[in-house]
Length: 232
Image (cartoon, rainbow, N blue to C red; front, top):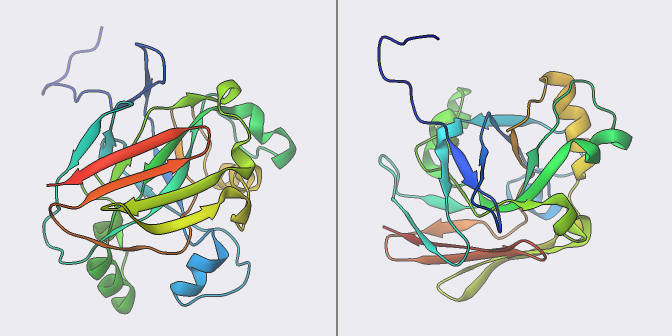
């Protein structure tokens, strides 16, 4: 049995709907600008090839069903943005997965938020530098319980929405993805060998905006329940 020179970190994990067992997180992949209207509001148009960035596995902020999570307002920013997303949980790994086979690699789905320090991200873009500081900070990936794929319903056609303090900010459908779930897995698995425990944040629709301390966020996807957070 291996021993370590310092205590090994705890395994990042996410609750599973209706189960005491949890989903262990291996990596968090995120797809950029994967809804056309969001791409336009960020200054881009067209169906560009998908691109990806990563968040640390322990950036997850898991929230149990029916609970309101506490999202700490991060340091160094004055412009924290919400991005509601469908999250795909991989149960069967692989590389060079074809779109026709991709759904067989999915364990389940969840509602997630890609929280973004937009001012830091924009500054890094201007300088041509990596923008991990804008995306990969602590608690930047809030996520609700994972619903097993067989119980998730028609995810590909589901409505997706987010309200801040009871007012609509984002509202669309998963059908508006530029690259659908299967195509995203095909592209992603060509660049990385996917592993059981990987999470894929599939992109956000238009309507992203800032939140401040004291705000309450509630987002949902049909068939997957809701994710509720209070910004602390």
